[in-house]
Amino acid sequence: MGVGTIGLGFALVGALLLLGLPVAVVMAGLGVGAGLFASGSAFVTSMGSVLWGVQNDNMMTAIPLFILLGEILLRSGLADGMYVALAAWLGRLPGGLVHTNIGASALFAATCGSSVATAATIGTVALPNLDRRGYDRRQALGSLAAGGTLGILIPPSIAMLVYGSLTNNSIGQLFIAGIVPGILLTLAFMGIIVVQNRFQRAATAEARVPLSECIRLSGGLFPPFVIFGFVMGSLYLGWATPTESAAVGVAIALLLGRLYGRLDFAVLHQSFHHTAVLTGMIVLIICGAFILNVTLSMLGIPQILTKWVTELGLTPTALIFILIVFYLILGCFLEVLSMQVTTIPIAYPIVTAVGIDPIWFGIFIVLMSEIAMITPPVGMNLYVVQSIRKDGGKIDDVIWGVMPYVVVMLAFTVLLWFWQDLVLWLPRGVQ
Image 1 (spheres, rainbow, N blue to C red):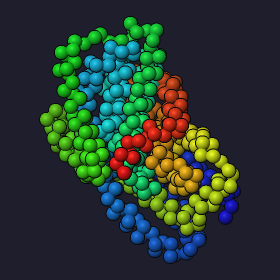
Image 2 (image 1 turned 60 degrees about the vertical axis):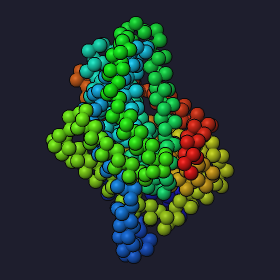
Image 3 (image 1 turned 180 degrees about the horizontal axis):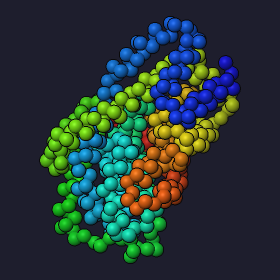
Image 4 (image 1 turned 30 degrees about the vertical axis):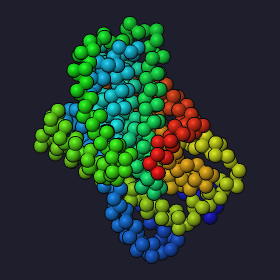
């Protein structure tokens, strides 16, 4: 099998996905079809044990738990108090409440793991305040869409769980590797806002809140900080697995939601229902990806592509820059989870063969996924933020508002490549 034939095969996958067919159906269907063609009915028989192993992986339990954690925080109203507290502290900066959008997104991301949930939650809380105060529409909408992307970089992260399951890398190390880049990218986003507002401070900065009032409102920061501390602290200290830390986070969120929020049976029902729907979708996609991966391995496609790339003589730096362009284009047309499960099984053997650290590559994939969340025409966060607007404006405002953040994220990815210790020094501490 030649590289050209493999290219045609992946073009077929892309075409089927662009036609709107379900991701799980495309991958499972092509995997089974190619497997039957290559080895007959024995392939179908072997799939039973493969799917059983996937479903019984302990890591898979962490996915619904982290989704449930985010759902509880979203629906119990804990995000409202968090936003008000951050507004008191950050509103005095050039850009005012736009800084609060980024800070609140980062803090909510530290307990959620989903970009869409982060953008929806913070956007719902923030947009009415921003509209009342007359903030620049594009700047406000862009900060919400871009801030939401922090949901899959700052741990815990569902995207990292998917990457870890597909590549058999440590989820704990991936989570810990995302802390420093997540903090730095948050600060970079806030730097953009300062630059955008340096000549309009009087128009965009909020009135200073007395220190005593800031301290009083800071109680709204207590729930997310406690949850993040227990989840990541237990992982970093080696006291719990990712699944166990997720369970601890859910238990604490239930308690804090009851004490500080609006947690009742109706909220619990909504949280469990939405968790089941999202978990079912993700697990089906992962099962389809594993079926396709078995077929690819059986046909030797990763080995063929790895040998081909190696013979090209590309340096690791050249390969990373090619992958940046590849994912930037792909992210314009594919949803994030589809992009991950269709490319990671192929890209991972290639990058590890040229000596790229697998944990660093996991953070790279997450950053590329973040950019895909805010690049048209398929960027999910663009549509999430647009859907919660009440002014009837066009989505062009969101797209133009988010463009400066795309540029900064690309530059940040390049920075991480040339300074990889920003990603790897914390994970080395738990090896």
